Image 1 (cartoon, helix red, strand yellow):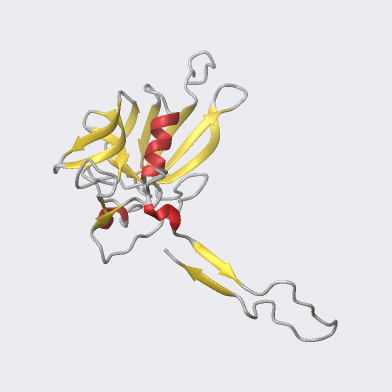
Image 2 (tube, one colour):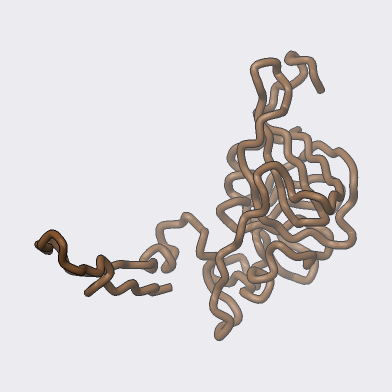
Length: 204
């Protein structure tokens, strides 16, 4: 796909099964997909096929094998989809946390699991017909490396995906905070620890 007239879609997606990493490429000035623009951590499975495919259809919600649900699903090939981490019901607060914490490892039945935010980005920005190339390469996850996923508490079995942009997501009200003294006057030549009086609190 080097002819600019043929590359009408904005992105080309590659999935490295070995590293469970997605790299999204954009078009350069010559109409070739050579510019890496986004890296996404994922979970593939042993049944995830190798090869080049073109996405077929999208579903805001999709019932998956095992009677679980995927949000922002995009069909890659056959029964293989991009989708959010599985949910126990068609509700955003039922993400399976055990599965979520396994992002970045081989953990699916064959589909390509990603965070809700990444599933939505693919859903919104990669039109039907986008090429997806699935391959294996142990030497490198991709040109942008492998992102690190947020880990969620293991004391509960399910809840909201912390990346879900929905305004109702309770994770939006949580986050790190830093408090400390301000407007300190320090005499030249005296010892002063800039961290004195500062406390960092992670509320997640």
